Amino acid sequence: MKVPFYGYARQYLSMKHEIDLSIQAVLTSEQYILGPTLQSFEAELAAYAGMRYAIGVGNGTDSMWLTFMALGLGAGDELVTNANTFFATASAIWIAGCTAVLVDCDEKTRCIDPDAVRKAITKRTRAIVPVHLYGQCAPMDEIRKIADEYGLFVVEDNAQAMEARGEAFKAGELSDAVSYSFIVNKNLGTYGDGGAVSTNHTYLNDRIRELRNHGSAQRNVHSYGFNSRLDDLHAGILSAKLKHIRMWSDRRIEIAAQYTQGLADCDFIRLPYVRPGYRHVFHLYVIETIDPKDRDPMLAYLISNGVDAKTHYSIAIHQQAGFPWGKPARLGSSLANAEKNAATCISLPLFPEMTEEEIQYTIDTVRGYKPMSP
Image (cartoon, rainbow, N blue to C red; front, side, top):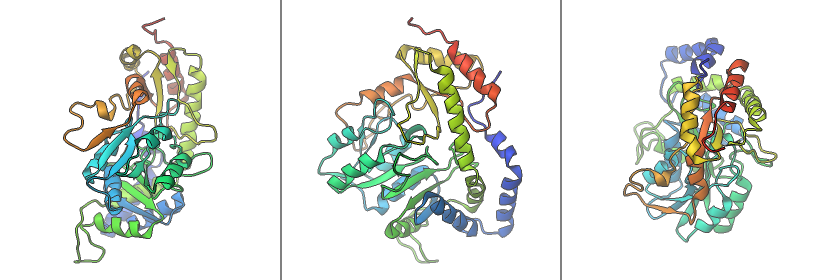
């Protein structure tokens, strides 16, 4: 059996009529950039997120650095974020001209560790950028408390956790802005690339809208800005998909529960930890080998047996070749958990359209691995 990592075509075919109608409507409207379909999706996304505004931009990376610039952050300003995340988070900090301060993750959740954040704060710190890693929210209540104590901005990297929430908060409730990525592999993804920012601040909404469109809020009137607009075609696709996001997230949680039950007695791997009361939507189901020496052989074993497993993220940002590439950066006092996460992680296939046979085959294949150390 072959178990794919993604199910793009399956998802499209499951709602082909809706997607096709949306695409046709945009094509016949002759309004493809900053048109009514984008405006409609932005309103839908803001309502879904429970926030006043949502601004569609070109991609998830742009959604972060445009937000940093709109906040007035730049050279000499330190932004604290995870060391164990996709490279784009740090890249966005550097694009805005800021200093990336990389700190450790929590040993259990692998989300950013509030204690590490607190230890990393200096007089130059201006913002905290917590990543909702793998589909589980960072502990935003603790992050907000630290931010209030030191007078810092909070910008959530929510590229991986649409539909997730904490025990007593939802995404965006405790921050200045939330960044989204809509690249095709996300829980809410278009057929290409895209991103958005949601916020309750009018000044951020207005400034990001100008920055994404060559500094223009009015035709032929420009200030300093860029070209980063979510086009109407992608907005229409996302609008059609947004109606299904809760159902898809529920299914992801079901599949994750099956994995966890089926692999519970495998003593050679560590299973994902979900904080009590949190809704983890499993953008990724990441297991970790107990022995780092098992990671690469186990990954090869799974792939050779038809399970298209992958790694996210097998090289921590500070361990990438050439770090820091001449960019301003500072490291937390210890990054041991982040480094262990990178060295042992394996992502199993998980998408809402998986069949029961594929789920069970993946479980059986993982269980069949023979670890190098008894």
